[in-house]
Length: 531
Image (cartoon, rainbow, N blue to C red):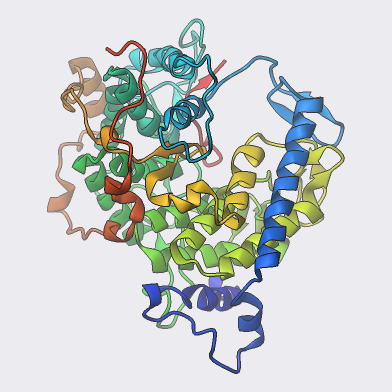
């Protein structure tokens, strides 16, 4: 099985060297070092600075090319130097909230970002945009949001009703922050209600969720359960919502979900760094029984190591990351899907995704192991050598022959380059104050501040789903009232005491930034889209 990827054992050994928080740290003064240890055990300061500048150059080459050849269209065609996508602005809610909060930060860690004329306009835009998303919830028969909404007219007539779990259940962070900024609970409560509906729709025997659900019937269209496409950010936002807002219910839901993931999806030897057997990995399973459903893993699953870092399950995070680094080393990039049984790609393209870079960055922040700087260097080298085109960086069409597609996805600049630069820029304010910030699933920075853990409304405001919605949910899942805990014992699998980000006491800002007037199956990883 995966044991044929024996190189992962070498990378795992190196990555674990400086785990244990100093108790079993790698001793750089021990001699003689092996050849692999000499390569990965350190990196010079000059090399780190060079990598930081090279990453900056990569970003600005892509950004300047986008502004010159593609703006205001959505994306850049880096081979033929043109734009693609509609030529109107479609601002992201998280970006607007993040920019507003950074401008309003009295500590000004990034310098004075506030224009003289600024009076909360970005927050007003965020509020306006979110209000245009609400019809996606209001028109649903279950409380789950429609996957698409027209920002002028609401949900289009005849709109598709199937949405991925990640799309329906990854709105709580942004909606919760917005509700607290403007004093209007409707956004947070809409997102929480959607999460509760998904929770009620879990399989009664396994407790697992599927990856695609019908928002009107509440029935599962896709019954694949995994940690990658279609589900990934749902798990992520259960944990991040708890870190931000402190609601025990979010933590409890994440804890139980993480326990079930390990119970049903984890394959390989029981312990990452000891014992015999195959290298551990998380596979896609059938939500009804936990049986293996596919023999592939997808590139979005590389982000799961980052979630494990936030959860404090460091050895598992290191182990998960080592597998994806092995695949990266084999091809120079990550294929969209990799068949762990045949040890070959199932879906060949690589669209410059950020997930593996993000996990590499978070693991370096948690361990300070120079091994991850070497991983970052390999990523940077591959991107420059394999994807650089005349006017930017191109999607790799096939990892087998390295042919290119004429498309640079927007997340390349906003996430891939960002995490790679932060990996090398150890003196960046985000890194120096890492206990004060958290990233959204789209890579936007939000503060960890006490005011986010305060609220003036009842969290049960929307807890009672209206009778029509409840009837639809019950019809879709007649066993939703059964107690899963009565069928099995669950043991919390996370260790948040290791996560510096959970301790919000270090956050210095005690006041809420002013908010104007208060009152298809895997491959789908989405938010409510606009037409």
